[in-house]
Length: 112
Image 1 (cartoon, one colour):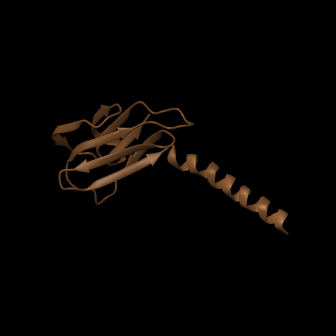
Image 2: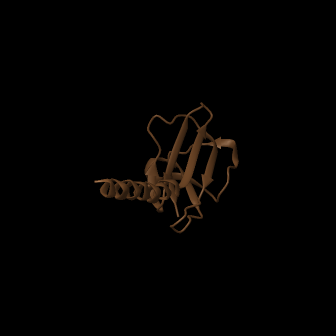
Image 3: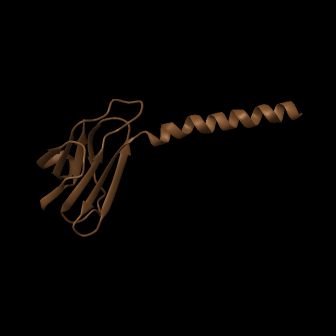
């Protein structure tokens, strides 16, 4: 009985350790609006087109983009769109957190 218990604990521990990197190795984007709204997005793959939440209101004053992923190719370009469904005016940026002066409308994005 003790042998079974001693094998079960290490197996569960090993599975937990293997799961941790899978959940922490994602790119991350944070959108900050002039009205104080904030939207966070993260993932491991490129994004063809994603809309921000419908309640994200006001122009965007800053976008933080951290492209680093551990086991996937890192994206290098974030394209922001002024309208939903990747329509409207665009702004392309790389990694970092440049402030937008003046603030811009951002309703969707594409990540490559």
